[in-house]
Image 1 (spheres, helix red, strand yellow):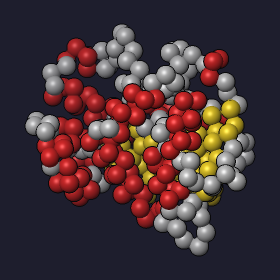
Image 2 (image 1 turned 45 degrees about the vertical axis):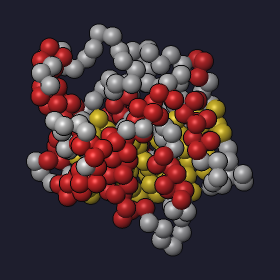
Image 3 (image 1 turned 180 degrees about the vertical axis):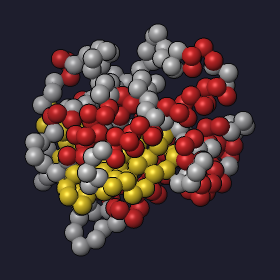
Image 4 (image 1 turned 135 degrees about the vertical axis):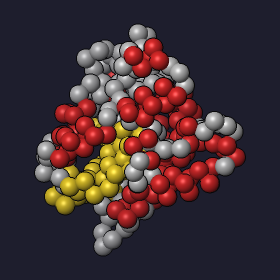
Length: 268
């Protein structure tokens, strides 16, 4: 394919994903990750709500957008952008994620693959749209990453940022009666590699962004209701009704603050 490139600048055998001083990689876990996240109603709903929120900013205008999907995982969001006719760079720390995305995006030409961290991205390269979804909670220094992501956006461009909501995580665990876990600031002694280890409080992320030369143009909760249903069979049986409620109330207070993920759209 004419635009297909792989930049394996960071060799995975030198990276310890379990190190306390490093970011989380999903090498050796990608099949389980794909099944757990996108083989469930929660993953499907998260994806569809993010696409819905981004709708007005990703429509093809006079020319394709130049987009980067940072920590793109399986490539599910990248595929949406490529189907719209945009040019895309796919990035992930996990070599296995890059290989899975290459398979999932094999039909497209205008895609470049970069395996590595934010530091491995091409220097001085900026994009019309930077996507970073469900990544910050796996990073050792998420606020430094936010600043770096802003620097990757062209003037007037868009940053789409979603992350695991620590406030909602605390609220859910209190509802479930996990009082000792909450008292320990929701940190397990034994790390579970598919559980985010650095959830963020939305207001702290918003405060950080307000100190940068950007404008927050949209904020929304993702899965404000789905995960709290007492009857979990309704997550599948009433999926369309749940999705309609999420779209209707996800941008409004107080509901948006209860979303298991929080989504910010930022103009840079």
